[in-house]
Image (cartoon, rainbow, N blue to C red):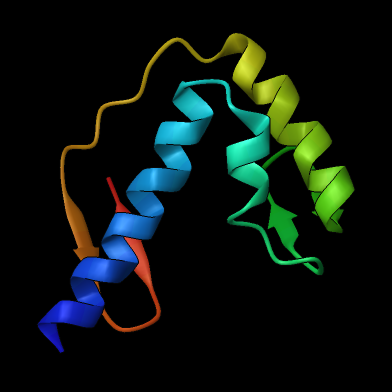
Length: 79
């Protein structure tokens, strides 16, 4: 379903835009209460813990360029 794919990609882009804009309140809108973040540095569970990690990331990130985007009804990939 092309419309659902576009919506999923749009949500992913909005999430990353909020990070680039250093808008933690907006980022929070996109996170599930039981989110689990798995990164090379650590595995973090729970919305508050993940928000803390994202906040630290937002302090050092200077920009983000999306070179490609793919999606379906429930998944999006931004490269």
